[in-house]
Amino acid sequence: MENTLLIGLSRQVVLERQMDVVANNVANVNTNGFKADRSLFAEHLMPGAREDNFVGRDRALSFVHDRTSFHDFSQGASEQTKNPLDVAIDGSGFLVVQTPAGERYTRDGGLQINNQGQLVTASGNPVLGTSGPIVFQPTDHDIAIASDGNVTVVEGTNRIDSVRGKLRLVSFAQAQQLLKEGSNLYSAGEGGAAQADTTSRVRQGFIEKSNVNSVAEMSRMIEVTRTYTQISALLQQQSDLHKSAIEKLADVPA
Amino acid sequence: MRALYTASTGMAAQELNVQVISNNIANMRTTGYKKQRAAFQDLIYDHVRRVGAQASDQGTIFPVGVDIGGGVKTVGTPRLMGQGTLSPTGNELDVAVRGEGFFKIQMPDGSFTYTRDGSFQMDAQGRIVTSQGNPVQPTITIPQNSSGLAINAQGQVTVMLPGSTTPSQVGQIGLTRFINKAGLNPIGDNLFTDTPASGAPQDGIANTDGFGDMQQSNLEQANVEVVTEISDLIAAQRAYEMNAKVISAADQMLQSTSNMFR
Image (tube, rainbow over all chains, first blue to last red; front, side, top):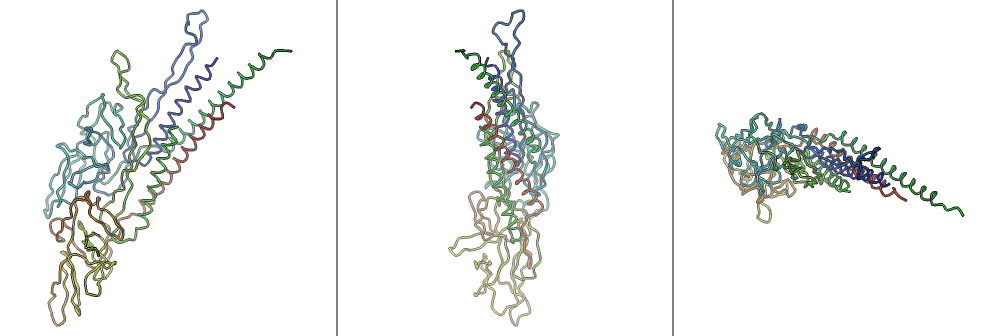
């Protein structure tokens, strides 16, 4: 009897969650290196009656539940900033960041230098090179980052470049297993270990924007709202049906 | 409904973004101004179903999880310390730095501030001062009746004294550098103060040891690129509108729920 209500409710719960995912994508439409999330739903079959070995057996009811949200790792647009400490990664690689909780990975290439001369992220965590953090000397200037991640500077009045390190780029066999931790960081989770990435290229003076497709998100949002409203209407009609059935059937003639 | 709060973090972030951009545009003709940009990060995620968790007792694991994000936060408004273009002014007390280094200025309370704005003046005692009247360090006094003031690439100030045929040096304008220029604290009036994030100031001489050189009769323009700022402004405005749309869509969903059973 209450099946319509419960099935409708299961759909509304996942729609609300999909709306949360869309809202998070839209909120991060200007976050550098952000990767959009998508929701996937699955059908959840439930037999109508507990015993379904009758001759004319009950048809199973299908509910819906949210199976996954997965990361869309497609490349975001690159914006030219001409800032020597901005790097965009062309390819599937990640920068390695040293945080108090261990190594984390990011695509956000808006880097800074801290008071010790270390190359850090916007939140102040050191970005790791192939041999530890990359440290600049006080007299360094004209920082150049090559496409393979090699960081060179001109030191003092020297005319030749001095190497300060090489950005460590890593990739993952199963990037979907990466866990978003907030602050533009990913952790490797249980799934896979980071492998050195030799195919990705670093572009200095560019920054990778968010890969959120705002038009698609807006249409998804409208779709979610409309579906939700339709189900609300459906449930309301069902409720009206119950109401009138009770009124009419229980109408005791005088 | 979480979407409401998520979208409101997005609106707050874009509002700040517009503030930063409008400050850049307002200062596009300010000498020695360095533009800022707003940097954002995503907020903490709610892992409704953790990726890699056990899916069955056969040891299969979920290849992807259900992660719901909570929106966006502003992590900082770093200043981009790139070189601005030099424009010749013809004024002999205008100095621009091409490369690393800030002019060091002594404030009335004795503390030091730093600036890239080299539009200097002379005060009643003949000292080289900023537009606010604070002396440039080290203090240089131009003798009366002198003429032909010249500032070379190293910042050495020479003048022609009456009756003399060779220029005589009256001082040298110093430069100061920081390991993290973006960590300087802006205090307005084109001035910065050092902070624990910027590192200690390192005084030095222009055109040596990695310091930039000085260009007399030039001023450094702001490093704001109008085209970039306008396109960023459009992007920020659209992002703000989209977040507002998400709020009204979430509101519509809530409304249809509350209207469901009368």
